[in-house]
Image 1 (cartoon, rainbow, N blue to C red):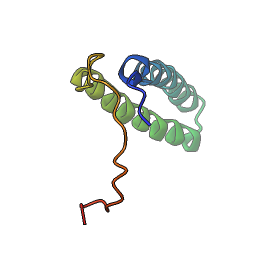
Image 2 (image 1 turned 45 degrees about the vertical axis):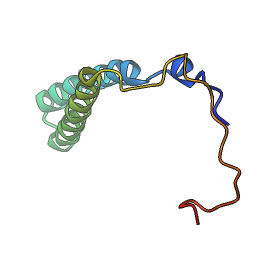
Image 3 (image 1 turned 180 degrees about the vertical axis):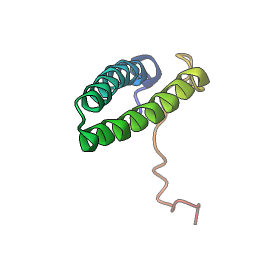
Length: 92
C-alpha cells in the first residue's frame, strides 16, 4: 500500500552517478595517456573504450539532471487503497 510520503522521502542517485562518472572520466583519461606514452596499445584502446562509455553515461546523466523533477503528487494528496472489488484489471 502506498503511504503517501514517497515523493518527500525519495532520493535520486543522479548526483552520485555524476560524481562517480567524473571520477571514472579522470581515471580513463589518465590511463589512456599513461598507456599511450608507455607504448601499450591494447591497454590504451581499453582505456579509450572506457572513456567513450563514461562520456556517454555523463551525457545521459546531465540530460536527466537538466530535465528537472517530474510531477509527483504533493503532501495534500492522500494515500490510496488498492481496488479490492474482485474484478479483473479491465473491470470484467
